[in-house]
Structures are given as C-alpha cells and as structure tokens.
Amino acid sequence: MKLCKQLNYVRSLSSGKACFFFLDNDQKMQPISIDRTRLRGSKGDYSQAYSGDLKRKNVAPHELAQGNIHFIEECYVPPTVNEIYCAFSLRIKANSLKPEVCSDEEVRVTLTHLAMLYAENGGYEELAQRYAKNILLGTWLWRNRESRGVRIEVLNSEQTSFVIENALKLSWHGSWDKKSTTVLNKLTHYLTQALTSSQDYFYMDIKATISVGWGDEVFPSQEFLDQKENGKPTKRLSTVCLPDELETVAFHAQKVGAAIQCIDDWWQDDADKPLRVNEYGADREYVIARRHSSLNTDFYYLISQAEHWIDVLNQSKTIPDEVHFIMSVLVKGGLFNSSKDSQ
Image (tube, rainbow, N blue to C red; front, top):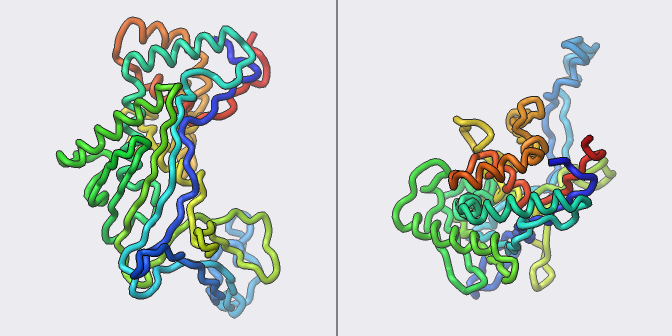
C-alpha cells in the first residue's frame, strides 16, 4: 500500500485533566494546594567544573561549594489528611475503524478493511484489555501510585461500577486474583464495545482513592517553561479550579492518556515492559527507539504492508503482534502523512 500525502486518525481515547483533592469532615471537596519554596541547594552539575570531554574549567574550590538558589513549586498532603483523591473522565469513540482524512481512496478502503477484519477476529478485545489493565492498575497515577494503598473506581456511561480495592497488589505481567480478574473482564468488554461501535457514546468517570501519610509529597504534572522569568518559580505545577474557584494540582490530560497508552510490549518477543504506543517505539528510560526504521518494525513500514496483513487475517484468526501494534497506533490517532506519494 502506498502511503498517501494526507492521512489522519482522530484519537479514540480522550481523557480530561485529572485533579487531586481531599474531602473535609462535611465531605466537601478541598484543594491540594501548592507551596512555593526557595531552596539553597549545592552545585553539582557537570558544567560547573567541566566543559567538553572532561576538560576542566579554571574554577576555584570555594566556587563549587557556593549555594545554588532555586525557586520552585511543591505539593504536599495537608496535616490530618489520610486519603486524597485523583479523578478524571475518559471518552471513548470508535475512530480507528476508518480514517478521518485520507487523500487516497484506495488507502481508505484498505485501512477500513483492515480494521473490519481486526474487529471480526477479536483484535479490539486485546487492546481493550490492555487499556483496562492500565486504568485499574492506576498506572495513570505515575509516581503517586507509590503510596500506602490505592483503590480504583470506574463508573461507565451505563452507570455500572468497576472497583479494585487495592491496585498495589496487582501488576501488568502478574496474575490477578479471581475478583479482580472479573472486574478486568467486565471493563474489557465495555471498552471493546466502545472501540468497535460507531453509533453509541461511551464515557467513564475514573477515581483513585490514595492512602497517604501527613506531609507526603504529591506529584502532579509540571508545566513546560520555555525560559526563566524573574521572580517566578523555575518549576511550575499544573492546576485546575474546583467548583468554588480554589486551585488544586492536576495532571495534564496528555499525561493521563500517555499512561493508558502504555501497552506496547509487542516491540520484542521477550519485552520486559510495555512502552507507550509510539510510531517508532520511543523508550524514554533508555533514550532509544525500540522500533527504529532500520528494523522494519516501525509503524510506517508495517502499515505500508496493509494488504499483506489483510491476507493474514483472512487466512487465520490468529492476529500477529504487528497488527495489534498498527491498530494501537490508529487508536492513539495522529497525522500519518507521507512527505510525498510513493512511486
């Protein structure tokens, strides 16, 4: 299949901002506020004493012992609070069934056919189970998952509730107990419906109850700062307003979505972890592309072989990992334009 000049898929999973809060004695939402702190740290980075390939700078010993002032924002659990909450909403729409924009009708037909066969062979159930796992594991809490306990509650558009009492006892690769497995299967079924039905509207409200200690640090999203501004913190935290207009810390929607999309353990037969779905398998921990174009495992090469994958799905109900990966990228959505038509 020739990659066309214009090819666009709208994301199928759209999360909102996740806000942190706690409840007072009257069960009223209260914000987890930001502390602004000036710190006198010590100088320890490479450039203080070296340049280039371990080339020493002419620095006096006392200069490296001078304080390094930082003005930052931090966030901590208020005293007397033993539980905090983090909640967000998630909309699901079956946008991967066909392109939103496609400049080549043949490409449109081919990709729509691929998605149809993938659905008929149960492929979306595999993706749905992986998204459900990350939701129920509380992967989207990032560092905040490292706490005394995490309870996850999901309420879907049918007003069905899915509850995991202690997500810390579960893991991506490990086995789940019977009760948790039942919850996982039910949520997987709901997500499968949402990813394959273009007629209905699907959404979920997701909330984590996090058991904490007084003064525990909370880790919301950080704002990206292009440059330092005089008198303003060099580390800024993301916030959102509660109904009473008080600001509380939050996760960016993109950070929540990134955690839910951490499902790609197809990048290698013995992959030790799932990566966030990315066209080139970007692994931030090791700063490497696990699906480098030279390996012929990247999204653009694999999707160019769409006719081959259609033949495979027609001949067998066993879905290759490459097809799971292709469809996970289409669920993620994005612009997949080629710079020019293939000749």
